[in-house]
Length: 183
Image 1: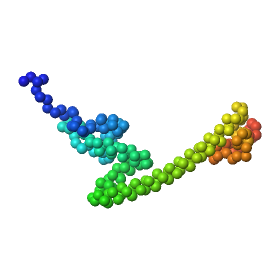
Image 2 (image 1 turned 120 degrees about the vertical axis):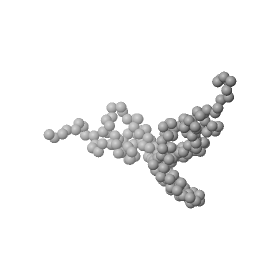
Image 3 (image 1 turned 60 degrees about the vertical axis):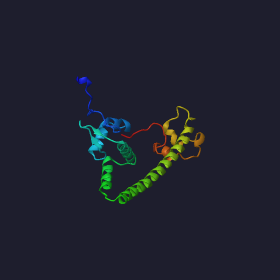
Image 4 (image 1 turned 180 degrees about the vertical axis):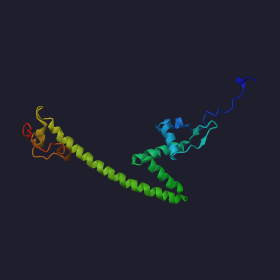
């Protein structure tokens, strides 16, 4: 039988059905191959097997793990923090106790997230007020000096205090002509 006619043995290069190689996992997760390997080095991710050629093989749970890592990073965790948290969870022998730790962790993060949302909503309000205030500035003559802004009474600004995000950028000294310095 010629070499071309021999039945081919399963290649050590082809992934097994349903498993992903590191490059495929990286592509599906939106990460780089280097990031996936780094997650593995840190103990955040483990391949379920290796081919006879040494290629890492991952299942769909690896993709879920990467998405979980992304979410925790969005919450402000570093990869080292995530590794420490995972280590604590893995050290717990009883499932209910591990899930209690997870529940406590997520409850704390929910409180922090709600506080962040409140801060961002306040910032949104301040930005809207500032933009509304600045809209009236478009009516100023183009040659109006910037130093006149703190005392502006044009248009919608009459008697109105500038919002803090506007007031904070005004120079502390009123416009008084060219500044002179004593030698």
